[in-house]
Length: 166
Image 1: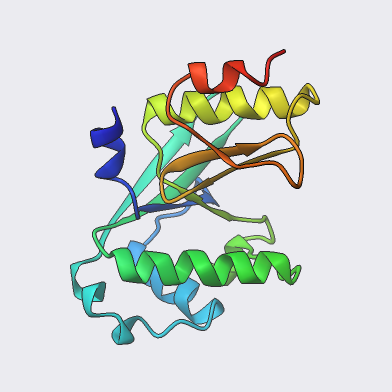
Image 2 (image 1 turned 90 degrees about the vertical axis):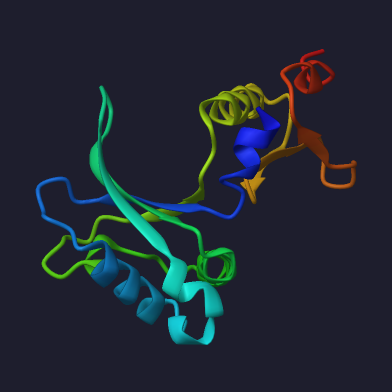
């Protein structure tokens, strides 16, 4: 499972795009880079970028997501600039990346396999239960920390979370 996740290590997902609109992945990526003040031409892997628009529909969510892959340096720049914007309380809206969309927020997440999505959900459940304080994903890995000054635990297996369940 770790090998499968490594294939997605630097891939990103732009979540929350409008469901009823025909999206042009290249245009959305271009607008995203413009909003985050990134010049894609400065990244040699930009020409190799692969984009895939997928519709997501389940009980709670109906939206489109844009999968951005095969350009690790560009994806890293997008991830870094997005984190800076979030830290500075600068929101990213659907209207910023797609003309004619509403002011609904969109988010950038790491691409996780189903197994690592399960681990992230299990860790978030522990956080909601007050057993741990911090849960985050970065580069396709799931991290947890019980308190601010404690060591960071990389979660690779459900057993890694057992120490926090007590």
